[in-house]
Length: 139
Image 1: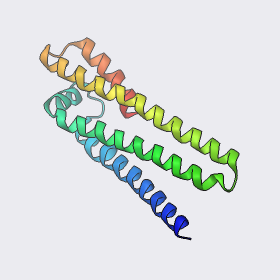
Image 2: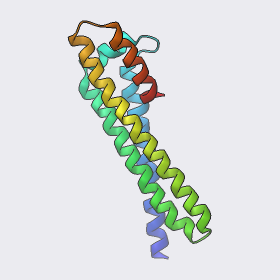
Image 3: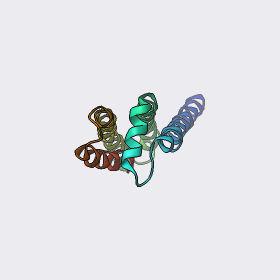
Image 4: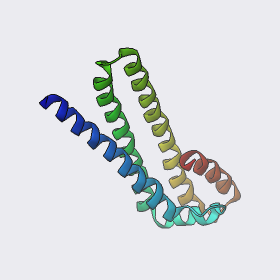
C-alpha cells in the first residue's frame, strides 16, 4: 500500500510540475515578449529582455523534463494493467518530449536572431528568419 501511495504522490507531483512550468513559461513569460502580428516589436522585446526569453526556454526545459518523468512513472503504473498500452503511452510521451526539445532550438535561434536584428539595424532578412523561428517555437 505504501508503494502505491508513493507512486501516486510522485505521479501527482510530476503532473503538477509539468502543468505549472508550462503555464508560467508559455502563457505568462512568452505573452510578455510576443507582440501578435509584429515580428519587429517582438524581436526588439526579446533583444531588450534576453533574461525573459531565457526564462521561457528554461521553463520549457523543465516542462520537457516533467513530461519524461511523467512518462516513466505512468509506464510503471500502466505496465501492471496492460504492457502494450504502457509501452505506447511511454513512446508517445517521449515523442512529445523530443518534439519539445526540438522546439527549444528554435527558441535559442530566435534569441540570437533578435540580438543580431538590433545590432545590425533591423534587417528584413532577420525579420523573415525570426518569423519562421517564432512560428516553430511558439506554435
